[in-house]
Picture 1 (cartoon, one colour):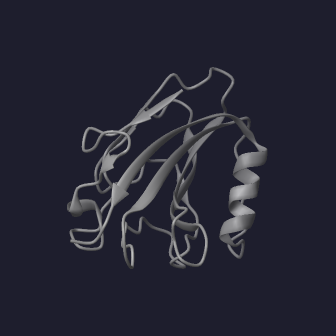
Picture 2 (cartoon, rainbow, N blue to C red):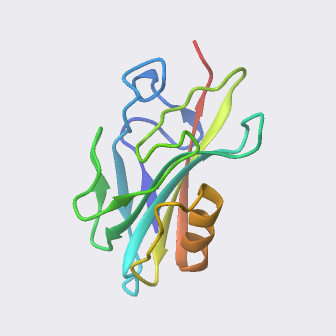
Length: 146
């Protein structure tokens, strides 16, 4: 399984357009080799370098297993967004307080369509996704405020 972006290479800088210093929109993403047994896919974007511990920037789940991309500034049809660490159900771009942070885009192939209660917090949501994961792939971007 693969995840990539036409906007930045793995372990390279995320363009400021996709951060709090730019348009704060999601970058385009491309998915490949989703396992045939997958019933859905999910995407979780985290910053493990955040001062208070891992900070979750975006969660999309129940994407059809046939999804091959997420376009810039969009959410795939028939998918759902869960609350991130900003307390919102949307993409929140990189905005590190200091230094260069790593932003990990993790794509999960899931064995089912999952159900997440509205009141679930980020850690509960991530546990549900991980416990239903068949396979995963990552893309890491870097960012430091300009």
